[in-house]
Length: 555
Ligand code: NOJ
Image (cartoon, protein in one colour):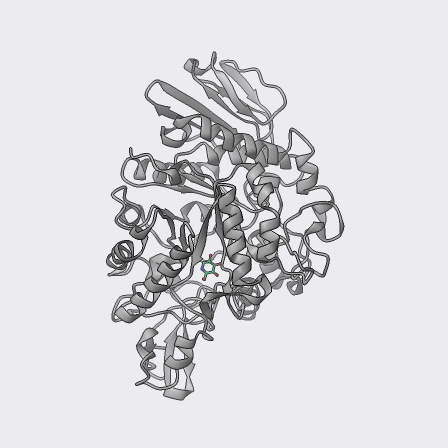
């Protein structure tokens, strides 16, 4: 297997709006990030993935971009960005920009032109269609509820938006669009950035005739219907040749609807497209089967193990995995897969062990290293995310859910759970801002905050620090082969990593109760590399404590 720096790295995702506010306007900003680089250095991460910081009307918090080469006013200036980049590089930290090019904002100058007339030079930058039988051009739905089409009076046609109506989809079949995007990417690489996280990149190539697709519970076909379209690999290969090969880049494609076979093409080791993809199958283990994320069921660990193992073994030797349990679109993992009450710290550390010991590049989402939890939102007015708000109104008005059911689902799964301000200390507003935060701070900041965790050797932060350090010390953690043990056990996730003579055993209990387990003999005399309880004594027959986790190296 080829050794690469991006395989050996740990990535930290920053959602700038909620990270650190340096000027008291209640919104995080670039200077706020620069202030916290030493904190990230102390954690030990190698790469920052910066969620979008470009000019944007903020319909979808920056994922609707109106100028790719300008900084969002609330976040600062291009000079602030340059300073952040230089300060990160001084500390040996690389920066990945979020590349959002499946769509732009409807306020981007290309779209402002495009909608003017059918013969405007920018018309074909977007996907325009006439209506069908007095209705929408096809049955596709938006990711954020409702149809994926918006009628535009000026030319009596509809434009496609797989996300909100303020996020019209670009037409990648138009070579001019690809050239514009590639020129813009090269401009950022010339600035010295280190790569890109590519937003819903699996959706950029649509089938020419935009056929109807199977409909879900809300009456529309899933936005994922457009995934892995006919030319997506061709376009990414073109991007690789015209842009990505111009520098030593790292790329990760957010690939909604990706299958294992498709992932092997996107992230193949011959590096003709991307370095790795985000797949989402493990984020569906607690979704019901009605094809709607608001239908919630409890995760069965056997399903999680099956999915993770499918990806670990499926990409072995041919491509590379990315590893995540959280990001700005997902709820907090400790509330979702662990216990955010009595065993919050133990379960946060257990989840970290389980993920960071797998093969792939691990991603930490801001606050995950503190074991931050879901937020106790009281009413729909506490939410800021358009996905959550749209779902609440559309699905309750249609009678698909009651208001109580949908509020429960939102409290469990809304993206806003991950978007509450970063908890820096126990001062007012968690030290995030001196003003009024754009979204409520989680009241548990008085207990859960970075300052407190830095003061304590047994904190979740210190545990992450140790996991990252171990990765630098032991190549087997990066490159070793993954093999699952006990696939049918409903409570224990146990696997090995093997490289030559080196072998590790990873044991994680997902249960809040004591569970007996047999430790394979070759490990009973081994060395414990990390464990989440203060003491441990390894033996052939062990009783695991609630959410216990440890890693043993064979002697
Ligand atoms: C995926 C992003 O992660 C999400 O936050 C965003 O809303 C959509 N893509 C649309 O850009």
